[in-house]
Picture 1 (tube, rainbow, N blue to C red):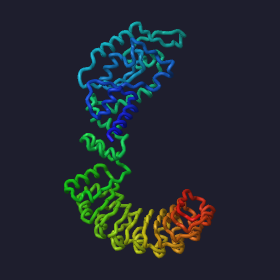
Picture 2 (cartoon, one colour; picture 1 turned 180 degrees about the vertical axis):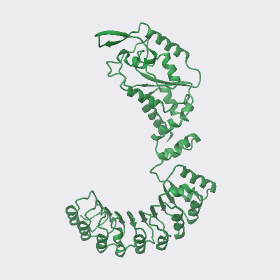
Picture 3 (tube, rainbow, N blue to C red; picture 1 turned 90 degrees about the vertical axis):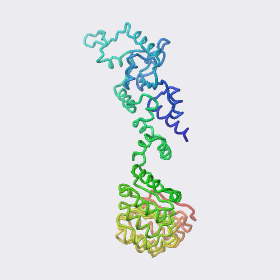
Picture 4 (cartoon, helix red, strand yellow; picture 1 turned 120 degrees about the vertical axis):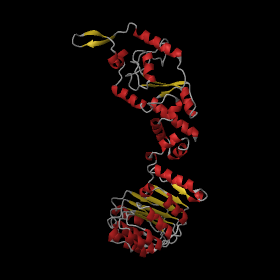
Length: 465
């Protein structure tokens, strides 16, 4: 895993500075080793229009040679353009843990003197039609350097390098680079969330950068209470504070009991409780009382998932559901039956999405849908509802004519007649799932093809046709 991280760090540096020297790459792979002196050089994009117009490199002016003024600018963290010496325009950033190489500085100064001797920068005199000599002015040096030896470097590219170099405005050593927040923010964009969780444990500086909410948007943390049962209260409190700092708005609780729910509601920061909008309970042993405490302590919940919660009953849903919920998922809860659907339709007038996997739901449950859900409910997934028949679909199409997405996966008693009924009445369907419906044949598919003109996705698996 750490080798993968090293490769990502190397890729980031290559993308930012284009061409790190080999021993710097080796330092990157070691993840933190100090270096005495190294440089990052970048050849500018668009520095020369083509390879033919680039100045030739000679032995007297090897690649990477630069002038003393350029080195001084680099030590101040400023991008510099070298158009006087015969190397391509470069940005050299020197970071030294000790003394700089004296011979390199002397060689750079000699190169500067050699380049300036006899230098005559000429520009076209358009008014007189003759070539006029232009002397070198320190205040206008950049413009003259860009014109030297035919190099055409765009100002936009110059600004781009300044922006790239600005990500490390203060770092002078490798250790300082690994602690520079601006550099780390750029770097951590190249690692996945799992790697970020590991990197956040390296040091406090890395954790401060990685705990920014933008690194965790769209993710749902999972709290495995089976592993946390033996943990101390201080450890749980630290976990809750960590989740709060990263501003998660979604949470999944695995294997939670009523005691775990009480601990979560009493210990988690109030800002976290007010922020959570999506909660999932999976393989949990909470009862109706625990569900009521959970939904009462998280007032902003709009999405609720109950999966494998066999202790929750219809009475608990009647007592816990609130009108703010717009998305509800009930799966593998053995106590879910027709009365559950009655509670949903009565208590959730703004329900937009309903996912129901229940083995004891019958046609009578679909009679509870009323015109209240006609405009709000657009996504309905009825999976593995073995007792549903074509008669139940008749109640469905009259109550919910505006459905956009419908799944009847695993409803084994649905036949061609039921599918034809859907095709004739649910004209706005865009997604239809009929997988694992063995009584559906080609006849039903003909009805779908002729009636559902807006259909975008049709899922067929394990059907007779």
